[in-house]
Image 1 (cartoon, one colour):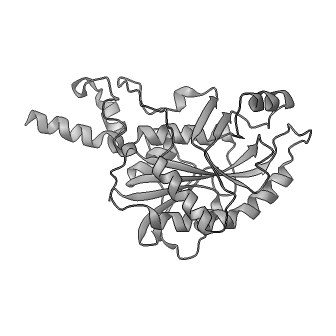
Image 2 (cartoon, one colour):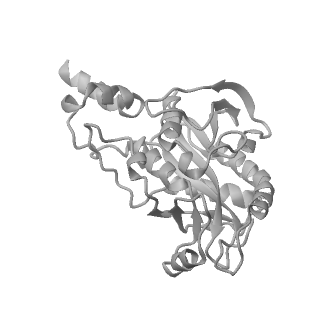
Image 3 (tube, one colour):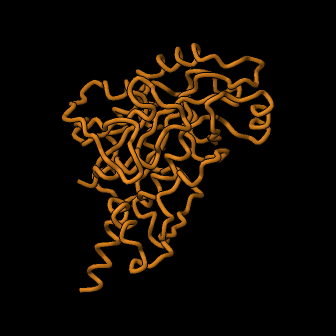
Length: 293
């Protein structure tokens, strides 16, 4: 069924009221192993799949996460909307720890761009990414947050993605502030790029855990974890409300992101790449076969 909802976040996110767990599914992908098994079930009458990006028990560092496998796995089970919940550092005084930002822009400071695309290997594609998250899904998250009393949720902002796993130096933090960025993290940009290539609508709840280090304060993991735990219940309630607002039919612009983006004609796609990208290119392959008939 092509109307599933994916939730990427921490392990605790699928411990939600009214979530009826139906199965755990280990998905094999052409890109290696996902972070963990997918946990599937029903929430608000919708099929939902949860995936902890760092694995259960938080086993994976940011640079060890296999984002391609994670997003391919979600797409392969029919996910068309993705809600990400992620911890970030604040680069603005107005965004204190335990506040929420729903970013609408990203700035890429990662160094692994070959792992942030499904394409290559004989199929060239260039997606539009000027608006990297789904406007409609961002609005749904905002309304859900407001219903939960999170009236100070910040709608919009730029998420700068660093490699990690170390936190920023003070010089880096100050430079990011001078460039006008709002929050900083280590994981969300690859998820957004790959979701767009897989024609899934994505939006993010960025949960602030610290002020980075620009306020002359070192970032300590103990404080980060404390704020994460406090944010977890809020995130669960917001996600629960948001799921109920997502439409049943996948007909948003993000669900057609590959139209006009693929340069290589289907007859020149290598067989192994066709097979590897089957969940993503299925409708194009079907159309090509119909054209032959």
